[in-house]
Image (tube, rainbow, N blue to C red; front, side, top):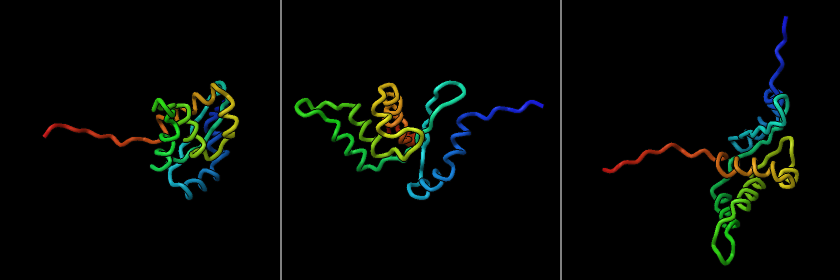
Length: 123
């Protein structure tokens, strides 16, 4: 009889099952970001959604003095620091690995907060 190898994502879900339940009780919604090392292994990072105040603060911190332009790297770093709950990597490990920061930063900026679907039309 052939035994099926358990997916590494399921292994990580099981590893953090109790901690995720505690975070859910504390923060409500918790999201996981899986980062693949290869087809057989990877890492998991867990996040809570930012509050509107944290979104506003991250935006304000990202504005470059003088030019008024927004720096997405600063914004994602702030949101990452505010919302990362734990997992297989520390905040410092993510910030010190450029490739990792780019992947996690993209998630934090564009996928951490799910926008409601909307539809508008003229009356």
